[in-house]
Image (tube, rainbow, N blue to C red):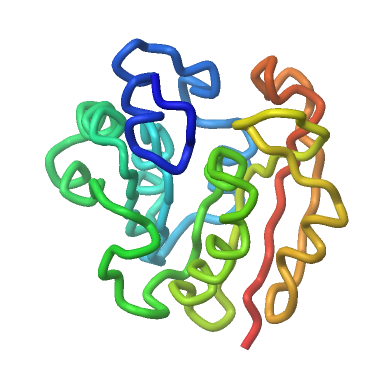
Length: 200
């Protein structure tokens, strides 16, 4: 079984064997709260590393134009299976870093076990790519994993890591801990809902 999370086969083997302990099995309560308080008006959202893609329908039903991408074919197949054809066409099998999205084409990028799933050395690339894809005054939002980890994935952030990783033009605008009952066992007590504005 592949042991390096930067390779699609690392994830393919786990999806095919149904070894997905990070899979929440639905839409997180924190996102439900956000969408209830912020109904969309056609804003464009990207979900990188979408996995099983539960949030795709949630964003769409809340009024957002949502796209998702994952480089694992079994993950994409799972996500597409859950949605109707129009949304399935927006779930892309591809590489977040190289897919030909137009620059500054999204209002929001949603985080859910993407940053913590890939190697720590890739974090700066993820943030740089996110900055390229977000519109001015666009936002990063979602659930971030904090805490000490000796091996990964998942790879936890520290507060210092996060401050260094998201320099200006990103500004942290909301930071809330998730209640323990809203997290899976492997993440419990170490997840935070965070929102960051890209600025000008």
